[in-house]
Length: 409
Image (cartoon, rainbow, N blue to C red; front, side):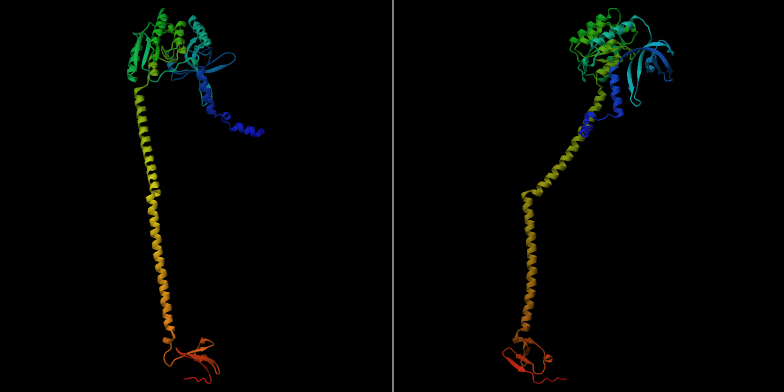
């Protein structure tokens, strides 16, 4: 009974074992979706600055360590030189390398420990929002694939808006872009951003982009403000947060439905590419044409087979087939009849000839008789003295006895 249960469990798809690759891929997905943004402090060790510009190292505390990498693009913005034994704070995300089953910290920003009140405020507010569930994926609204209206909350004078307009026109000119001029830097910027978000939300746009170009932490701080993050969280319109450069992570990025590395990237994430759509349409058209032609060819063959089958089983075909059978039988009958008739004719002719040859009146000529001994025709040479024989012709039967036998030489 136990073996049967074991076999049942093995065959049940719920108990099928994972491959190593499947397990590592699931771990990678879990890690990267759970630890999309981490803030960690530790001591630098095993430091290597690669010729490519990437920096490889570990950070550790008294109990453990974790491998780290800072790629060239982010390392470019470092304001100080990293050294072994240095205590730092790192912004980054966790990723896994599935071929080796290992994970590491991808560093986007590194600062010396104890940088001041802004970092502390950031962490305190981040923790509050995390507790409130502002970062939960369940609150993230999906972006439509083909938006008709996009509202952009940003400064009208920055270079970012011009880049966004240019990219939008290149990618998908069918979408209408509405700019909500907004103050994005300074003491009062947070209030203006909140006001613009609420106004943009009232437009019932398909997507809202909130952000600005790059700057210092102080320049970008408005997008870490509590009231700005609360306005983003409360909006009904799907929002993309696009603040600064790729290395800049604001609280608005975490609260928004999607984070873009730059304002230009936000437009790329919002709009489909008309070139990609054209290629897709061409592929669909080609696949549809091939499917139609293949299906037409298949149906034509099926129709021809059905037509052949119909002709084979039609009344006309059956009648023709029976006529052919009857004709064949008649031909065979006539041939066999003629063969039999010819055979019987030959037999009759042979019998007739034999009859004629054996007819007594023809067979026995004048002066000739037939000799019978014991009712059998015999020759004279077979007769002996005192044999009794019958002499017959066409009119008479005579009984005679052999009294003398003379051999004629």
